[in-house]
Image (cartoon, rainbow, N blue to C red; front, side):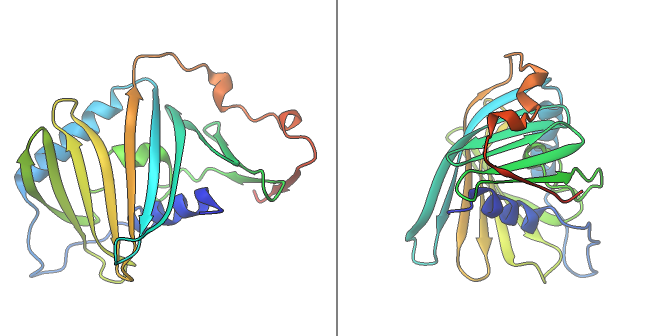
Length: 218
């Protein structure tokens, strides 16, 4: 967990990959699950801005905690910012600055506008459309549990469980089950969709990080 964002990117990267087509004989998705996921995605897209706390927990196959980090994410259109201890990530809609305090390094990359771009926004919208088969496992006590199975069997994980807050119609948490046995749980809390987030939140200013090396990979 030393490099938190790299872990987060790894988890997201396992999910957000090139779209695949369902092979013949693999089965069909549950229409009720699609209805729920579509509603969650549609609602999120209506938010002009979002500020939310989150946690990322990593466990091994024996349920032993391997790491746990918390942070805050800000989203507005294609812009986002992620703040965790020791790291700060800015995206102004065109470029991404990743600040690593421990390494005293700032990495600058260009935001790829393709569908495979990894962004926090994709965790709340229709990433599931063509890469997964999905089914509704349960609908009880205000939480809807939907299981997603990747169509591409070469992926490093074999399933994803999405837990949806039924009353709020938003994703509460996502759990990724890696084939090697590790489990990654991304949990959202304190989502604020009514506050106005200024554009300056997403603007990187190197003067605020003196003594750090900027590595431009664009």
